[in-house]
Length: 130
Image (cartoon, rainbow, N blue to C red; front, side, top):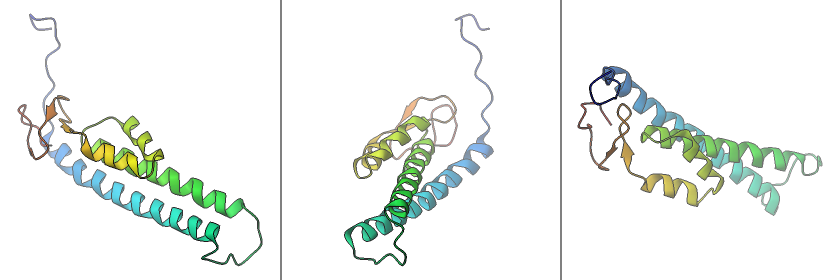
């Protein structure tokens, strides 16, 4: 321990952070687009724009809706992690239209030291990439 009662800061793994940021971005886009497609398909079935090929009742509609919302929440969580935020911000994806807007308006946080950073910043004051 240092004299001020805090543990020393661990070394920054810049390469790992630089590799993970685009991965989280890609996963968020894939999950978000897939979730949106599932929700659009469920809405099309619900409104009668698409004729279901078999009379299975509301089961497939509910299944598509649940999977679509789950993927959308996962995408919002991945987007929040990419911005250096906690995964729980992904629960805002339950508000399908409002959630991603709220997460997008949050500022970035450093993946290493957790300090807030400017929206356009590419590197934290501690040296870690954002």
